[in-house]
Image (cartoon, rainbow, N blue to C red; front, side, top):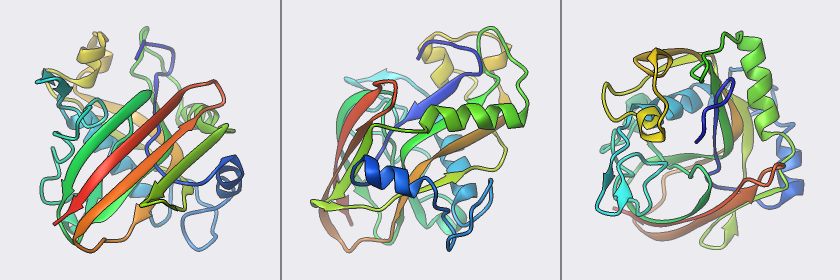
Length: 239
Protein backbone atom coordinates (compact mmCIF):
# COMPACT_ATOMS: atom_id res chain seq x y z
CA UNK A 1 0.00 0.00 0.00
CA UNK A 2 2.78 2.41 -0.87
CA UNK A 3 1.84 5.99 -1.71
CA UNK A 4 1.92 6.96 -5.36
CA UNK A 5 0.67 9.70 -7.63
CA UNK A 6 -3.11 9.65 -8.01
CA UNK A 7 -3.33 6.87 -5.46
CA UNK A 8 -5.41 4.00 -6.81
CA UNK A 9 -6.54 1.32 -4.39
CA UNK A 10 -7.20 -1.98 -6.09
CA UNK A 11 -8.95 -5.01 -4.70
CA UNK A 12 -10.00 -8.22 -6.34
CA UNK A 13 -12.91 -9.95 -4.73
CA UNK A 14 -14.94 -12.52 -6.57
CA UNK A 15 -16.53 -13.89 -9.66
CA UNK A 16 -16.26 -15.03 -13.30
CA UNK A 17 -14.66 -17.67 -15.30
CA UNK A 18 -11.45 -16.93 -17.19
CA UNK A 19 -9.86 -14.12 -19.15
CA UNK A 20 -12.27 -14.62 -22.03
CA UNK A 21 -15.19 -14.17 -19.70
CA UNK A 22 -13.72 -11.00 -18.21
CA UNK A 23 -12.94 -9.57 -21.62
CA UNK A 24 -16.45 -10.11 -22.88
CA UNK A 25 -17.91 -8.66 -19.71
CA UNK A 26 -15.83 -5.48 -20.04
CA UNK A 27 -17.96 -4.35 -22.96
CA UNK A 28 -21.21 -4.93 -21.10
CA UNK A 29 -23.17 -2.51 -19.05
CA UNK A 30 -24.91 -3.43 -15.82
CA UNK A 31 -28.29 -2.24 -17.02
CA UNK A 32 -30.03 -4.13 -19.84
CA UNK A 33 -27.16 -3.72 -22.29
CA UNK A 34 -27.02 0.06 -21.98
CA UNK A 35 -23.41 1.24 -21.75
CA UNK A 36 -23.09 3.44 -18.70
CA UNK A 37 -20.72 6.09 -17.38
CA UNK A 38 -21.38 6.40 -13.69
CA UNK A 39 -25.03 5.57 -14.16
CA UNK A 40 -27.18 2.47 -14.04
CA UNK A 41 -28.56 -0.12 -11.70
CA UNK A 42 -25.40 -0.74 -9.68
CA UNK A 43 -23.22 2.35 -10.16
CA UNK A 44 -24.25 4.10 -6.96
CA UNK A 45 -23.84 0.87 -5.02
CA UNK A 46 -20.19 0.64 -6.11
CA UNK A 47 -19.55 4.09 -4.66
CA UNK A 48 -21.26 3.08 -1.43
CA UNK A 49 -19.02 0.00 -1.26
CA UNK A 50 -15.90 2.22 -1.33
CA UNK A 51 -17.38 4.61 1.23
CA UNK A 52 -18.02 1.62 3.51
CA UNK A 53 -14.45 0.33 3.15
CA UNK A 54 -12.81 3.69 3.86
CA UNK A 55 -15.10 4.39 6.83
CA UNK A 56 -13.92 1.34 8.78
CA UNK A 57 -10.96 1.66 11.18
CA UNK A 58 -7.87 -0.44 10.49
CA UNK A 59 -6.53 -1.91 13.73
CA UNK A 60 -4.74 -5.23 14.23
CA UNK A 61 -6.66 -7.26 16.82
CA UNK A 62 -6.13 -10.91 17.73
CA UNK A 63 -4.30 -11.88 14.56
CA UNK A 64 -6.55 -10.08 12.10
CA UNK A 65 -7.55 -6.52 11.21
CA UNK A 66 -10.78 -4.62 11.79
CA UNK A 67 -10.99 -3.32 8.21
CA UNK A 68 -12.85 -5.82 5.98
CA UNK A 69 -10.25 -5.69 3.20
CA UNK A 70 -7.41 -6.41 5.64
CA UNK A 71 -9.41 -8.87 7.74
CA UNK A 72 -7.79 -12.32 7.44
CA UNK A 73 -10.52 -14.36 9.16
CA UNK A 74 -13.90 -12.76 8.42
CA UNK A 75 -14.34 -11.68 12.03
CA UNK A 76 -14.95 -8.09 10.91
CA UNK A 77 -16.91 -8.67 7.71
CA UNK A 78 -20.08 -7.24 9.22
CA UNK A 79 -18.66 -3.95 10.54
CA UNK A 80 -20.76 -1.05 9.35
CA UNK A 81 -23.42 -3.38 7.97
CA UNK A 82 -24.53 -5.58 10.84
CA UNK A 83 -28.12 -5.63 9.53
CA UNK A 84 -27.33 -4.98 5.88
CA UNK A 85 -26.40 -1.86 3.96
CA UNK A 86 -27.51 0.18 0.98
CA UNK A 87 -31.09 1.22 0.15
CA UNK A 88 -33.43 -0.45 2.62
CA UNK A 89 -30.51 -2.34 4.18
CA UNK A 90 -31.10 -5.04 1.56
CA UNK A 91 -27.46 -5.59 0.60
CA UNK A 92 -24.46 -7.24 2.25
CA UNK A 93 -21.00 -6.26 0.99
CA UNK A 94 -18.06 -8.64 0.72
CA UNK A 95 -14.46 -7.56 0.26
CA UNK A 96 -11.35 -8.92 -1.42
CA UNK A 97 -7.80 -8.08 -0.36
CA UNK A 98 -5.02 -5.69 -1.34
CA UNK A 99 -3.18 -8.69 -2.74
CA UNK A 100 -2.42 -12.20 -1.49
CA UNK A 101 -4.61 -14.94 -0.11
CA UNK A 102 -7.35 -14.91 2.53
CA UNK A 103 -9.81 -17.42 3.95
CA UNK A 104 -12.79 -16.04 5.83
CA UNK A 105 -15.84 -17.40 7.64
CA UNK A 106 -18.81 -15.02 7.58
CA UNK A 107 -22.42 -15.19 8.75
CA UNK A 108 -24.78 -13.19 6.53
CA UNK A 109 -28.33 -12.16 7.52
CA UNK A 110 -30.97 -14.01 5.52
CA UNK A 111 -32.64 -12.02 2.77
CA UNK A 112 -29.63 -9.89 1.76
CA UNK A 113 -28.22 -9.52 -1.74
CA UNK A 114 -24.46 -10.16 -1.79
CA UNK A 115 -22.54 -7.44 -3.65
CA UNK A 116 -18.81 -7.52 -4.25
CA UNK A 117 -16.04 -6.55 -6.65
CA UNK A 118 -14.13 -8.98 -8.80
CA UNK A 119 -11.50 -6.44 -9.75
CA UNK A 120 -11.91 -2.75 -9.01
CA UNK A 121 -9.97 0.48 -8.61
CA UNK A 122 -10.69 3.70 -6.75
CA UNK A 123 -8.72 6.79 -7.81
CA UNK A 124 -8.54 10.18 -6.10
CA UNK A 125 -6.02 12.83 -5.10
CA UNK A 126 -5.11 11.42 -1.69
CA UNK A 127 -1.47 10.76 -2.51
CA UNK A 128 2.01 11.76 -1.45
CA UNK A 129 2.75 14.33 -2.70
CA UNK A 130 -0.86 15.56 -3.10
CA UNK A 131 -2.21 15.71 -6.65
CA UNK A 132 -4.94 17.70 -8.34
CA UNK A 133 -6.15 15.37 -11.07
CA UNK A 134 -9.46 16.20 -12.72
CA UNK A 135 -12.35 13.74 -12.73
CA UNK A 136 -11.72 12.72 -16.37
CA UNK A 137 -8.06 12.10 -15.54
CA UNK A 138 -8.99 10.05 -12.49
CA UNK A 139 -11.46 8.02 -14.55
CA UNK A 140 -8.77 7.26 -17.12
CA UNK A 141 -6.44 6.08 -14.36
CA UNK A 142 -9.09 3.86 -12.79
CA UNK A 143 -9.84 2.32 -16.17
CA UNK A 144 -6.17 1.65 -16.88
CA UNK A 145 -5.78 0.01 -13.47
CA UNK A 146 -8.23 -2.78 -14.27
CA UNK A 147 -8.10 -3.15 -18.06
CA UNK A 148 -6.82 -6.38 -19.58
CA UNK A 149 -6.57 -8.71 -16.58
CA UNK A 150 -4.84 -12.01 -17.24
CA UNK A 151 -7.75 -13.84 -15.68
CA UNK A 152 -10.34 -13.69 -12.93
CA UNK A 153 -12.58 -16.38 -11.55
CA UNK A 154 -15.20 -17.02 -8.93
CA UNK A 155 -17.49 -19.86 -8.02
CA UNK A 156 -20.29 -20.44 -5.56
CA UNK A 157 -20.31 -24.09 -4.53
CA UNK A 158 -18.33 -24.85 -7.68
CA UNK A 159 -20.68 -23.02 -10.07
CA UNK A 160 -19.17 -20.03 -11.91
CA UNK A 161 -20.67 -16.61 -11.24
CA UNK A 162 -21.31 -13.92 -13.83
CA UNK A 163 -19.75 -10.47 -13.61
CA UNK A 164 -20.45 -7.07 -15.07
CA UNK A 165 -18.32 -3.96 -15.41
CA UNK A 166 -19.47 -0.55 -14.26
CA UNK A 167 -18.15 2.88 -13.35
CA UNK A 168 -19.18 4.69 -10.21
CA UNK A 169 -20.51 8.23 -10.19
CA UNK A 170 -18.11 10.81 -8.79
CA UNK A 171 -18.27 10.44 -5.02
CA UNK A 172 -16.71 11.52 -1.72
CA UNK A 173 -15.69 9.40 1.24
CA UNK A 174 -14.78 10.10 4.85
CA UNK A 175 -12.09 8.32 6.86
CA UNK A 176 -12.10 7.90 10.66
CA UNK A 177 -10.42 10.57 12.77
CA UNK A 178 -8.11 7.86 14.12
CA UNK A 179 -6.89 4.50 12.81
CA UNK A 180 -7.86 5.12 9.19
CA UNK A 181 -6.68 2.74 6.51
CA UNK A 182 -4.28 5.50 5.42
CA UNK A 183 -2.78 5.83 8.89
CA UNK A 184 -2.41 2.06 9.02
CA UNK A 185 -0.44 2.09 5.76
CA UNK A 186 1.80 4.92 6.99
CA UNK A 187 0.31 7.68 4.81
CA UNK A 188 0.17 10.95 6.75
CA UNK A 189 -0.87 14.50 5.86
CA UNK A 190 -4.06 16.54 5.49
CA UNK A 191 -4.78 14.98 2.08
CA UNK A 192 -5.38 11.67 3.91
CA UNK A 193 -7.76 13.07 6.53
CA UNK A 194 -11.43 13.94 6.80
CA UNK A 195 -13.58 13.92 3.68
CA UNK A 196 -11.80 13.17 0.42
CA UNK A 197 -13.13 14.28 -2.95
CA UNK A 198 -13.44 13.75 -5.82
CA UNK A 199 -13.13 10.00 -6.11
CA UNK A 200 -14.13 7.62 -8.89
CA UNK A 201 -14.15 3.87 -9.36
CA UNK A 202 -14.14 1.47 -12.27
CA UNK A 203 -14.39 -2.25 -11.93
CA UNK A 204 -15.89 -5.67 -12.38
CA UNK A 205 -18.63 -6.56 -9.92
CA UNK A 206 -21.10 -9.28 -9.03
CA UNK A 207 -24.53 -9.20 -7.46
CA UNK A 208 -25.88 -12.44 -5.96
CA UNK A 209 -29.60 -12.53 -5.13
CA UNK A 210 -30.55 -13.55 -1.58
CA UNK A 211 -29.59 -17.15 -0.87
CA UNK A 212 -31.67 -19.64 1.14
CA UNK A 213 -30.47 -20.34 4.68
CA UNK A 214 -27.53 -22.73 4.70
CA UNK A 215 -23.80 -22.88 4.13
CA UNK A 216 -21.96 -21.99 0.93
CA UNK A 217 -18.42 -21.94 -0.40
CA UNK A 218 -17.42 -18.86 -2.36
CA UNK A 219 -14.03 -18.98 -4.07
CA UNK A 220 -12.47 -16.28 -6.21
CA UNK A 221 -9.27 -14.69 -7.36
CA UNK A 222 -7.36 -13.36 -10.32
CA UNK A 223 -4.21 -11.93 -11.77
CA UNK A 224 -3.92 -8.41 -13.13
CA UNK A 225 -1.91 -7.50 -16.20
CA UNK A 226 0.95 -6.30 -13.97
CA UNK A 227 1.11 -9.59 -12.04
CA UNK A 228 -0.87 -8.49 -8.96
CA UNK A 229 -2.74 -11.55 -7.73
CA UNK A 230 -4.97 -12.92 -5.00
CA UNK A 231 -7.09 -15.90 -4.08
CA UNK A 232 -9.89 -15.63 -1.53
CA UNK A 233 -12.23 -18.20 0.01
CA UNK A 234 -15.41 -17.35 1.91
CA UNK A 235 -17.21 -19.92 4.05
CA UNK A 236 -20.65 -18.34 4.10
CA UNK A 237 -23.45 -19.12 6.51
CA UNK A 238 -26.84 -17.61 5.68
CA UNK A 239 -29.16 -17.41 8.64
